[in-house]
Length: 478
Figure 1 (cartoon, rainbow, N blue to C red):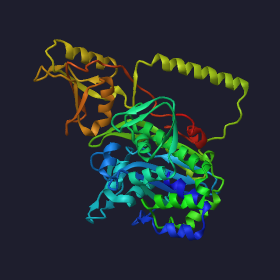
Figure 2: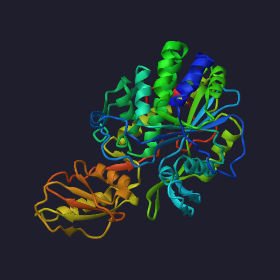
Figure 3: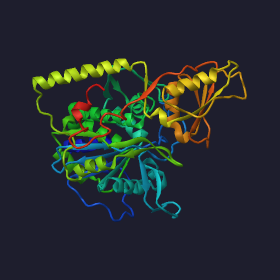
Figure 4: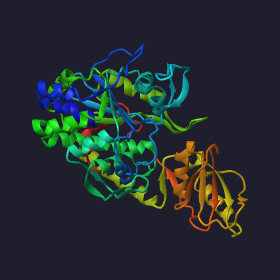
């Protein structure tokens, strides 16, 4: 989002203004110590990283937007942005934060200690080795050389949205997430910085997966590009200076992203619109790949991912141009949509989860004096697909009021999927419990609801000419 504002904005200002704003950028060296890097390819590749830093936010803002707790010093969002060599197309590929990877051997910048290569989730690279290790890990996974690095935190995100006057987002249904505080009505809503942050960070909507969250982030980014290009802000020097100075004051970028580069890109992209962008996600083989010590990770489909990144290296578009549809094709599409609507209606009683219930292990104990209640809940959980572990036990106490789910934080996605099958149950973190969830049945909230797993996300299996979506399509109601 910040990248689109900076690059597009450069087209409307002169050298003096951009050079002055350039001095406000906080610099980082993401390429320090990197060797044996991929070859240069056509176009320019940006790694845009969103961190969970919130130190510049007031206590009131943290409370209002549910940003409690401490930052994990890790990346909350990772996007690979490819600008074509002719500067008329931007391809945005979301990289799941929980992607299973192998961190390259590296030296800790603080302690100087040498670390061997090891399995990890992609978002942990930042904590282990900052920007350089993050760049190196992404380059190893994609085979794409990163030309520029841009780091955005919660503060810079909120300020950018606010200085643009808010960003309109359209949703087909009401969105409510008590964890993030998000509460949006169906239809179009103009989001300010705080509500926009809730929208892109919410992890307890739909199937609760990070893949669904990436869809919302892409949808929002497309709306930002449309707002920035259609509102006239970027062509008004006074407004633009306010936007750029606000953004640049709270981001970190590599030394190579200077005023000359911004001006060159901006001039080339004067006619850039939402239709000039396209969005895709890395193709996924397993959205719940279990790894000892890491818990649930996201495993890429290596063959399809190689095809996707090969297209970027070759500077080819990911989204195919759609020709006009014939009457027969339109009739077939209407019939397909009608059948899909019937399927959705038939499954309306079930709730979508992002992890297959069969991969979630559950042990049930009866915390009430009602004989057979534990067995009934165990049977119903097994019936909706969960892997129940042996016959239920009797809990130490028989006066439990609320049903509780005890879980290891490393399996938090599994726990939240289980909680959707037991609406109202209380989630209780229990370190080192391992993969088996413990359900203590109480007098309240023990009713089991049917759940189902669907495809991780439309476009999650994106391949060139396949799942990639044009930016002007992403702007539509989602």
